[in-house]
Length: 116
Image 1 (tube, rainbow, N blue to C red):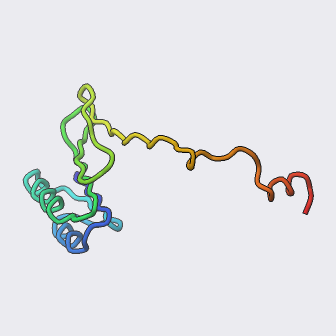
Image 2 (image 1 turned 120 degrees about the horizontal axis):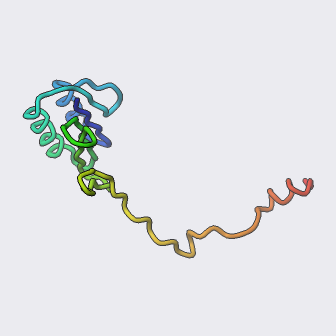
């Protein structure tokens, strides 16, 4: 089983994938092509994705039962003792402009104390 998920990719690429896979939702393709066809489709996706992102997941003979590849994602797959995990990017440090201020809004105070 092969699943390809496209985000912000050209419609021509979606048309190319529908020749081999079934589009079950916008940008989500599923099917059972051979490994050779799957690899050829993935190369086409990487070539024509432009500014878009792509994810390929397929079944394999591993502990997890599947593996995946990404193209232009912020989250990267990493191998951790034989298991493939997703490494998310670190959150940016909070600056004084992003730290919320303490206290209640004026509307909340009026509602709380029953004043209009």
